[in-house]
Amino acid sequence: MCGIVGAVAQRDVSPVLLEGLKRLEYRGYDSAGLAVTNHDNQLQRIRVQGKVNELHKEHEASPLSGGTGIAHTRWATHGKPNVSNAHPHICRDQVALVHNGIIENHEQLREQQSASGFEFKSETDTEVVVNAVYEALQSNPDLLHAVFDTTKQLHGAYALGVINSADPERLIAAKNGSPLVIGIGIGEYFIASDVFALLPVTQQFIFLEDGDIADITRDKLTIYNSELEIVDRPLNVSELNADVADKAGYRHYMLKEIFSQPNAIAESLENRVIDGQVITNEFGQDADSIFSQVKSVKIAACGTSYHAGLIAAYWMEEIAKIPCHVEIASEYRYRKSVVTDDTLFVSISQSGETADTLAALQLAKQSGFLSTLAICNVGESSLTRESDLVFLTHAGPEIGVASTKAFTTQLVALFLMVIAIAKHNNLSTEDENTFVKQLESLPGRVNQLLHHKEEIETMAKDFADKHHALFLGRGSFLPIAMEGALKLKEISYIHAEAYAAGELKHGPLALVDDDMPVVAVAPNNNLLEKLKSNLQEVKARGGKLYLFADKESDVESTEGVYVINLNVVYDFMAPILHTIPLQLLAYYVAVIKGADIDQPRNLAKSVTVE
Ligand code: M6R
Image (cartoon, rainbow, N blue to C red; front, side, top):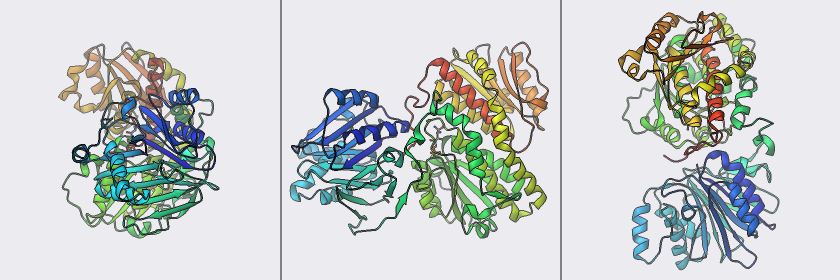
């Protein structure tokens, strides 16, 4: 999604802005731009369609220099990804503005502004905002008030950075529904969509809240709420350092993140399990009392996080014996559902900024749930700030758009949650100890699975010329098949669908021929024999099977059946373990196809618009 960087400093801010944009690339974008007020108090701007590297080249050719500036990476929503739609947008050479979010009433504002003589140079929803600021400045030349008045006209989500060449040492930032953080330097201030963008220049941050407007000069920061009252927002000191975003010698962030899973899982377990027991307080001080009242669980999430929720439902019903219902957040938020006051609402999100998941949480908070719990990888995110209970996965920053370590650590967090709730529903200490041992065995077992890398790389060659693939699983391995299909489609652009293996003969079998690879997850569990029968149905139709089987599953490669026997012994951790080879398969297929693995086309890391 769009990324914002801004700065007010004594030094030339262009290098800070360009570096900030580079560090926001992982969010996904298709054009980029930068505007600076130069030493003659004139606005200068460069914009490109494509990558930040292109912006760097343009900047080298005709450098901008000045102490106040804003920059942006745009992920197109309204209007094509081209230069005229790229931000910053400028009105009458005086006001420049960057925006993340969607202005829902832009058409109505556009009509009004056209009638008052504004000419539009882009197809974006953003241009009405910069025009509105300019218009407001005509009656009151104070930029803070102009932005404040403008926000009152806007419906929708926004994070804004605004500069004015007539007031050259000032930057106004506003937030409502899209993330925005202020970085505090020495005699300089910055704004950005997330802290990574600013780590080279500061470790100190203030997270704006919805409705906030910040008035920023070199030596002063004042934050106002939506009533224009001065408010205090807490200062956060980040423990991340600037090189968290480096590839550590791996070819792609995604590969680095796949290989960092043993460590990410170990970090996510540290201090959460002690002496064979789950430390419930890690979910929040009131967790014990809340968990003791839980009679059912509702989970809402998107994409990969939704798949994690689906697996948790199997665990919740089998281990805690508590009903658990999982919904896609973008569906849940618009559905009229029945809520009981003994139901725990759980949201899952890597970023904690996914607009649909946040909206689902906001709806849940008004709907009479027992309590809300967020499972999230980003501490100071909107989701964690708005939830009663919080469990942070300690996966570390995930840069690749395709979620890998965030997913496996979410599963760890969800398994801990299931045990913590099950303890109040007759889970024996002995069983708890067994489950904790299984969790503690994960880092080592994941590490062993990574050794299948070469075999999977070889298997991947069979997929490179395919246009479609089917993924099959049963029980808690169906969501793993769904996740495998999602990984393959998002980074290799091969159309992939997942089905419950038993559903095959109810329709998808019609698709099977010798050009359709069928990937199946074959754990050694009570459904293995059923799965084998389903696979025979594929084989009989000439379909080529690719099986990831536990070593005790007793399946061998034969004509048309390509088996990788994994070093997995079946237990509750098996869904987590079976994820690893599917991540590697998607990765190597995408490598062979030469795809842009870390920033797949059309996708964004943090989906902050609806
Ligand atoms: O940050 P979130 O976990 O809320 O993101 C949800 C989805 O956008 C995300 O999982 C997406 O599906 C990934 N790109 C999948 O790899």
